[in-house]
Image 1 (cartoon, helix red, strand yellow):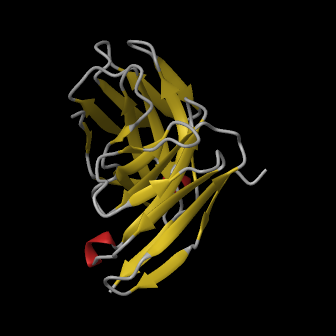
Image 2 (cartoon, rainbow over the protein chains, first blue to last red):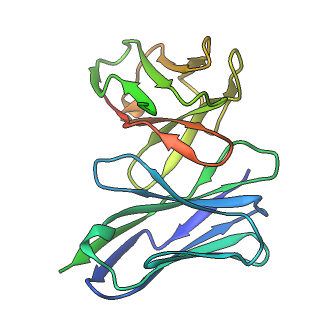
Image 3 (tube, each protein chain N blue to C red):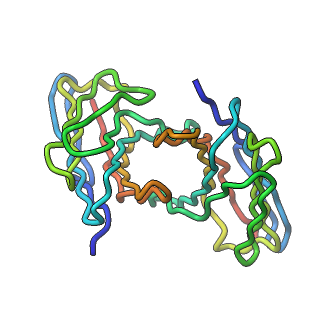
Length: 111
Length: 110
C-alpha cells in the first residue's frame, strides 16, 4: 500500500533559524496536504498542493511539491515560538478519498 | 457552526468493556474518517465513510466497527476493548479537499 515517509521526526530549532521538513511517497500522488498540530490539539489544515513543481507560500512557510509528485517539503524561515508543534504531510492518490499521513515532524524552539 | 465535535473527550475502560465514540459534523460533508494517533506513528486510518449508509476499512480496522446511519454522524465502536487500543482518536470530515478534525477522544484501556 501507499506509504508516506516524513523526516526528520524531531527538529530542535533556535529561534530565528530556518528549517525544512521533507515528505516522500512510495507512489505518485494526486495531491499533498500539510497539517499542523499544536501540543494537546488536533491537526489543522495548512495547505494543499496539486500541480507538479508547485510552490506556495504562507508568510514564513514555503511549501513545495516535487516534479514527480512523489515528494514535498515545508520550509520555515526565521522560526518563532508560535511555530512549535507537529507538522504532518498527507498524500492522496487519484480518485482516492483517503489520505496517508506521514509520522510527522515535531518542532521545538529554543528562545 | 461547530465544525466537527467528538464525545466523550476522555474515557477510561477496563479490558473487555465496550464503548462507542460519537463524531458529529455540521458542514454537510459526505466523507468522514476515524483515525487513531499514537506516539511516533502519525495518524492511522481506522475506518471511513463516503456517504450515509456506507463504511469501509482503513489501515488498522481490527477490533473496531463503525456506522453512518445519518450523514452528520459517524460512530466508532469498540466491542471488547484491549490495552493496545489505548490511543487518541480523531474524527475528520472533508469537502474532498480539506480534512477538518474534531478535538479528539483520549481513551485509556486498563
